[in-house]
Image (cartoon, rainbow, N blue to C red):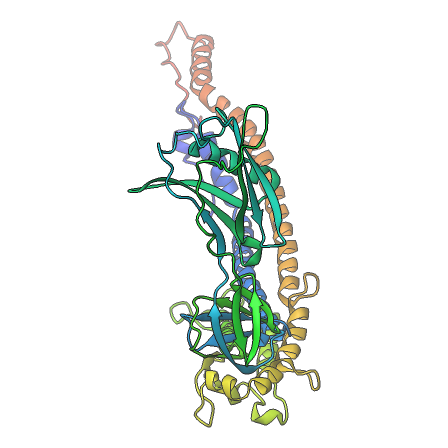
Length: 493
């Protein structure tokens, strides 16, 4: 569009609007800038779409690698108890499938010692009249356990409250593995000592209870004012597994069944329970479903790029990307992979995983009507072999190999697109920046030039008046004729 000025208003002393005129001049050159800026916006939109697809592709690779992992969820084992109120269990991948009959006769218990109520309460002295000190010997760990000395000194730790504090301090500093407390009820205050270990290692016993006079001599037949009851607990757990007896110092039993950890909950001597060890179908099914979710997310995102918007009659920002077509083709090839034999579990369809019209997958039923969970339970080895077979390569092994190439940081198909996009964005950004610098320089030059023109136009009325006055003074007059009228200059004269 041409730029025009009104000649009638240029010479009235108001001049021109320099900034408006310069903006009009530069507006004629901004068309190319808008094209570059639109290209920059398009590239950014494409980059966002590529990054989203790349994330979906990485998520799919993670899900496929879980199916490929020989120590992953497809190899996970579970142990199911028929009586979880008596026993529960967990199984490692190394566990061997099978059924076991278990009887839990007794649980491992922690050792406990306690006294009768002490006369006078928790702050009364534990030393009888005439005694200056006392001594308790605490054996920890049964008949062959270590004996710890508890020295009682009058005025220092000769009350229940002070003795408990002393025992806990000694146990903490010397790793006795016991905890002391004062118990107070309707009968009075008592001393209680608890083992921190179960089974024989936690068995407790007082083997000596004596007092001494001020000279350190033991007072015969005069114990402290602490009367200990018989020890409680400190016994091992006992159970039979398939008729074989086992004992354990803990209620968490390992080693009795290879790869299985037993958790003893309660004891029932005459109640056998069944423990079934086998593949963990829940973990396996969860892993397969996670793969389907990840695959569908990627396929759906790709489909969206190729879907034509009826309102604009255009595809997504990556609709013209040939690499995306290649990725789509590669995924379709991988998902159609099949084996031979393998007890009929040869492809995804035989597992009840069926393809929809849009290329996504649905976990449903196989041709024989079985669900995925039923197929896993019926033939866990064939199920695992479909995904992880060494010869020929299993479904997950084959898919993982392709995904490794597709997600390569340097050679991955989407990463290459992203790298090219970044390079082009940088080039367009540089072009825009350079052009904007040129416009800024041009603007300053134009403002300077048109400011000078404007100054001349604003001075024009004054110059015109001055010239008119000068001409009026120098024009001649005749004495024989009437005076000549003055001459007036006007715009355009």
